[in-house]
Each structure stands twice: as structure tokens, then as C-alpha cells.
Image (cartoon, rainbow, N blue to C red; front, side, top):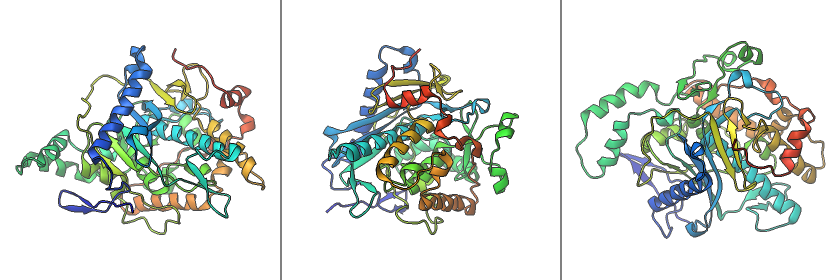
Length: 434
């Protein structure tokens, strides 16, 4: 029988997370091994290119089977800290809007889900991470499989809204009872800003609180963005928080599979347990009501590492590095355009993943399948309802409204995608490192 752990942050009891306690290694060992695994793979992939080694944030996803650290599989390695410029938005789903490392890591994970579903459906290969749900046309993740996210620093937004002195204070609290009174004052000065939804700065770094006061203001318009309004993208903390309630699989895959969650999230630097916990689920967990099954909060194991990364003051590069285990290729994406540096669409773009979905749906479903992206996303009603409930919880808490991208960018039909993209989706291409 799997056992789960209750633990404490300060004097506050924390409900058990999804990581078993009867493991043959410590939780800190798990965190350190995952961090080392991701860092070593990144160094291996970029050892001949100094330019690619320049990065501010490194992220990656590791898969374990039965929590065996000796057989860990790296699903993806990503870097990046910027978002697309508003004047580069596209109507064909070929550009990546958000090139922050942990965001594109999740898109790589979705690509892996498609590959594993294809393995089971087309080849009946039981090595797949998925299994068929009896008496259903849906699938679920095998209970032996777990996914672990590593981020080299705390996620932008609410998860990073604290002073570095607080981290040092928390790290020393286990060895001393003396607390610096200045740290309490610092925490108090930031208290009003904590928990707020925040958006990333277009083509830059950092986040700002959401200013929208009503639904109308929270909806961005295509002509407004092209006319010069700032393109707003929700922070990584906010996105991770929502995924801890609705899963990582997205709207399209929710038609086919049960929700999938991170079992652990490992932070390589600027880790403060109380603030990370608040940012990634605690700020709204008591306000999320009527969320339909099978969706709901899955608390990941949260941890720092034994040897945190040092803070870097260099400017972040205008590229994102992407490697995934499916294609075994490196992609370099221009973060201002959302396209690869060779001006191609990424393997993990909306259009590319939509094509994967359509291919699977034609094999599984006999009814008419929408070929327009926004229509396909609405098929799984419970998933959309769950998203609405999460957004309501943020609003009820006074943390703000979730900002919505212009709906026009999701109205593409794959027939609008050029032949180059469709060819690229179905065959390997050389890495883009120019």
C-alpha cells in the first residue's frame, strides 16, 4: 500500500502531496537527482556551442516508472524567459506565444503524450505509458508512471514574489531559532501583492499585476494588439497553479485521456516553501468549488535542491532551446517571433500538436471531428468548466481576472497551414542552431 506524508511549513500543517513516503531514498535525494539529470543532459546537448549555453532559466521533465531513479527518462530539456512580440502574432497556429522554459517543457510533454498514445493505438504496444479504460474509448496514465518538473529558479509571478533574504532565513531556520526582524518587515511590505495574478512583460522579463477589473477588460483583441496595445501573457506561477487543478494535457487531449499532473516540482534556486506552495495551489485551493470529476487539485511534492544555482545578472538571450525525446532533435526558437531561427514552425506549436490530435481522433472516434482549432478545444465540456471554476476562484479571492488572448488566433483550420508545416510535422528535420 502506498503511503503519503503530512508535513509542515512553519507551524502550518500541510495536506499530503502525491509523492509516496515509503521510497528507498529521501525526498531531497529525489530532488537532487532530478536536478542533476536535467543539468547534465543540457550540458551534453550544448557542450560545443557557447551561445546555447547562455541561458537564464533551464527546465526539464523527467519520467519515472515505479519511482525508480536508476531508470529515469528525460522527456525534454528547455530554456527561455521571453514571450512573442505583439506584432508577431499569427493566425495559423505556427508561432509559440510563450517561450518561458517551464511552459515549453509542458508543450514537449504533450507531444510525448501523443507519441505514447500512438504507440498503444496503432501498434498495441503495452510499453506505452497509457492503458485503455475498460468499457470506454478513453485512456489513462498507468499508475506506475510519474512526471517530475525541474526549473532552475522559482517560476515568474507569484512564486518569485519574495525577498532573497527570506530564502536565506528559511534555510537557516532549521539550525537556529533566531530570526532576523528585518525579514518580517520585508515580508509585510510585499504582502498586499502576494497571490495576485500577474502577466509577463511583452518581449522582456519580469511580471506586473493584472489590471483588468471586469471580463471585458480581461479579453485582449486582435486589432488592439496590432494597434499597439501590450500583449499580455499569464505568468508561469499562474499557469502552473491552474495545471495543478486541471492537468497538463490541455483541452484537446482531455477528449481522449484522464488528466495528468506533475508528481513533483523541483526548484533549483530562489526556493521558499511557503511562497511556492501559495503560488502553485494554496492561494485558491479553498475557493475552487464545483470542479467536475476527474479534475481537481493534485498537490505536487515541492522542493529545493542541496546546491542552489547562483543568480546571474546577464541579459537573457532572445532564443529558447528545445530538445524532446520524441524527435531527438534540438530546436532553437526566436522568442520574439515564436518561430525557429530557420523561420519554421516548432514541433510543439499549436498547429503541430493539433495535427497530432486529428490523426489520433480519426482512428478512435467515428463521429465528425472539428478541424478548426477553437472548436476542437470546446469538445471536452468538463475541462472547460474546470477552467472556468479556477478563474472564478482567482476572481473571488480578489487576485484578479485571467487574461485571455485574442480569440482570432485560435480560429485556424489546418487547411490554412502551408505544406511546409504539414511536412515538418510528419518527418524529422535537422536542428536549427544557426
